[in-house]
Length: 430
Image (tube, rainbow, N blue to C red; front, side, top):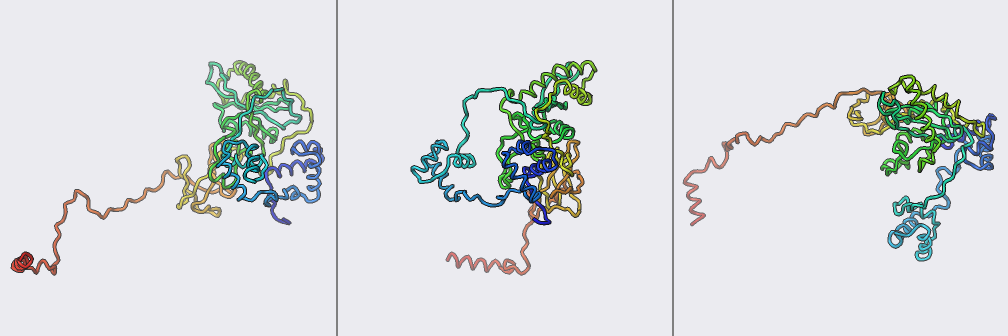
């Protein structure tokens, strides 16, 4: 890799930012171990390798190598076949015991559980409700940010019902909000974009199980082939920024943002009434100052002064992060279709091949962009596809008069006489 390119995962790029901060003296190794979710000794090893080898020292040494302890594929398939035939209603623990006892297959129950989940032969069982206890705040600003939408009559009888998209930092209680009509993907992207521009990229988001943030659909064929997990458009944007999405299984789990809704529904509604605001646009213009006053009044100091927000990487355009993306196939005449609209790709150096795939990005301002291999593609919109010319049918229509066939001049029929026909008939019946 000397003098060449270094391919790094999102996790490794995050380690690079943290190790650079440690090298500059802006963060201690103990704090870096919490950010990276590593043990202190492992964090020291990672930092030592970073000091010795530079950026490439953070790349995982086992990348591209098969596991030394992986079982052969035929053994795995044999276990799954035996499970389907005899132990289809067994749990992983009991099934691993029976496979060893009866089939002479030795496998750990956790390994078997992962195989069964991947093959769709077993699903997780529900557990009994557990005792809940109050969770302590996170220690660092930006370590965890709670996110939720609040539907309410914010304008009372002066306007329609709207939704307040709210972000609350778990460690400090700092809040930032944006008003929209509904809790949509665009609204979620707008409020997170505002947070990233003001404070930086948080380490994790705490959200509920809405399909705006998370999806439980089955992966597509393309996702299975590329090893990707099913993501929503919002989840894809968070993945680009390296933000972990943590789902909350109950409203009580993200109680900090739920309680902040109550503060907004009490104080913000009254402030809007006092200033006479009755529409979303004016409310969004008024929100930053109101949120700042709430932060001065209710925000607390974190237990640690280290800020866990990461800066936006240099050269990264947030417009290309907070957008919706869909793949489209290029036709033979370099036309793609998107939302019943047709776009003609013009001749250029970055011309995608026919039948190739391009990314259609729709930015939050409504503009469309085509991207192929990380570069934008020039195009123009056309009204409709040119109509195909209908082939002229060579068969006569059913209503056309049928022409009487006329024999050619040398046809034998023209040379036959009545006498020869009579003689031939007498010979046949004689």
